[in-house]
Each structure stands twice: as C-alpha cells, then as structure tokens.
Length: 176
Image (cartoon, rainbow, N blue to C red):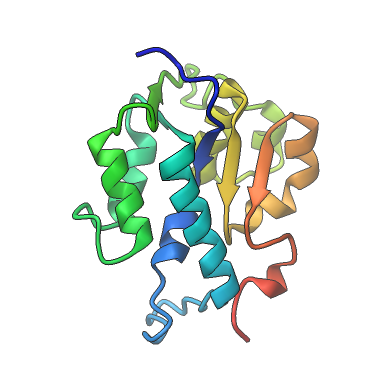
C-alpha cells in the first residue's frame, strides 16, 4: 500500500480512546480510577473522530499497539467513540490505517527508541508509541498519560512530537 503523505500521520496512545469512552455517569472502579474532566473527554473524542476521518493512524505490523487496544476497548465499535476508533483499526480502513515495521534490537527494545528515553525510565508500555512516532516522524496523541508530559523535554530533544490533548497541567485532567 502506498503511503498517503498528504494526511497527518498519528500514533494514538491507548489512553485517548479510553478517555473518549469514559462514562461520566459511572462511578470510578475499585482500582481507584480518577474521572477525566468532561473537557478532557471531549478533546479525546474530537481527536479520535478527526484521526478516523482526516488522518492516517499508524500501527506496528507485529500488533503490539493493537493488542493493547484489544485489552482496553470493545471490538464491536460501541458504545463509545474509543470503541468506534478500535473498530476502524480492526477493519484496517484503507487510507486511514497504516501498519509499519517497528524493528527491535537484540535486547527487545525498539531500534528507533532513543536511548535517552530508556535511560530516563520512560514507561515501557509507552515505548512502542514513542518508537513508532520517532521512526515515522508522526505525532503522538495523548490525553492523560503523565509520562508524555513529565518527559517532554527529552521527547522534544529527540524530535518526538506529542499533542497533549488535555493540556500539560495534570491537575486539569481529572475531576477533583
């Protein structure tokens, strides 16, 4: 499949569709989940709708990203916008989803993941998103994952672009 370079290419961290799915009427789970603000949830919804309709969503061919989506989202595409996003991923909508090789080193780390992110303790579960964004010169969409904010300087130095949909002040992400 030819790459469609006229579309903005994005890597979507799993927290974005999870926030988009959040049911404001349900109490937090026993895990102590905090409730994202309605503003944050709306920004996540808008970003996913734009990604589905206007951009190219990047995934790794090995399926690490899709596997993480599968653990958090409903493959039937409902009831939430995050689930609809996942359905588009499963269907590999031509022109909207692009799967690319994301090679690993002998030690299991991603070849294109800057060593500085490993050294600073960047979350293991987010490394696939950072490596893919770095390799493909794409933008990572983040809603409420603090690693993307806390490691912003290193990400910037490494030329990894992050769109923090809910802003960079963690106090604004969740209801009090």
